[in-house]
Length: 524
Image 1 (cartoon, rainbow, N blue to C red):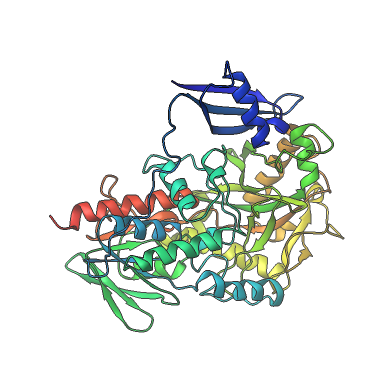
Image 2: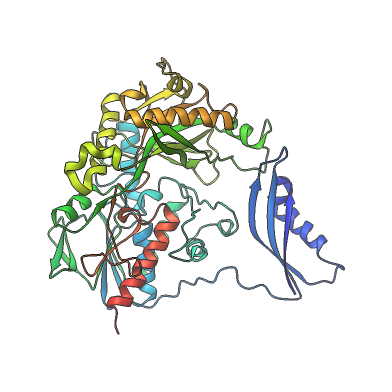
């Protein structure tokens, strides 16, 4: 007999596997001889009341075997001599597209402008310590994409184009902890993702796929309205039965190339703002309603949103990519710009909590850049990042201001300690952010301060700029086939194409595009 049960439990019980197992066994056995198997299915925190509870869903099997926890098997055929498919980019979308192609019996040829995860570390150290930005290898470009060294959150609301559980199982098959299968907001951690990404690379190579690092695509091979392949910066021509373009939201040269080649693209709304950093202890106190979160509760997160009216137009101000127990990292992809992002290690044990707080950018905001057509949003985004670079002193030291001072329009003489390694420079944020962004942020922060008493104060600071929330360009494609609306055999994919937002949704989109490419152009 199989029975699904739900309990609301104290954290000390819910997060202690041995105690939880004993509790469930005691609840659902009548004698010591009962053969009972237990599996926790889902765990989520409920901090709405005065006492924090953890909602636990479990499966109780009496006298029956439980089905295997993992259905995914790394059982690949050799595809070294199979028909090739070109994949541009080796972030989550490109990586999962490659794995899916191997499952379907096709050979992925992956071209990644950046370096493998180990070699990439040196370039990240150069940004943090020497303020040197390598435009080919940084927090956005390289094996595993932006997600590898920026966080590892796997939660997504976008599950229409794929099997979210399958994506989690593949991560577990390559080394992620099984907890990601049951937590409401699964998270791997930036310290563990590199090994998992490297294991996936080895799986692809062992099956006969190809991966070429430090190989930038500089041109497309277009013939009679079809994408035949690509040309690398070395001059090599690489062809396949189709091209999956999975270059991420920051590959500006690819957007320029598409524009130059008259491949149809369009401007897309995105969001822009700042990172706000508090002490993790304060966020724990605000969210858990107690002085200390104790041994079992994880570092507290938050999600905030407010509708703000400015000059007669209402827009949302919202938190984005909240990183409990995390760090702010420099994510510029070219010299002369400041971009920040957040990440958390698996234990989320930093003393800081940070989150992007952003405002949507739409057509009205980028009228000044209309002459650039579909690239208008990209030019707007780039100009704000360059302003931040100038304001910060022309290094990777980021412009910052105490949160209370920003809201009160007061200069900050001194700043707080920060997790941002290159350092902070006190700046009036109105000199960095466009007026409509700054004013909406002020109003939004006031609302957040009312919702979370203690959130708005000079015990927090804002850091600019959080500008790579998503791509400012969309590469349109057919809704059903995911093929480009104009160019045959071209499959725009993931965040860079404007069809994903985060590791899990990009991974699902990679699989979706790979399947559709083979349906259209695979062996009949």
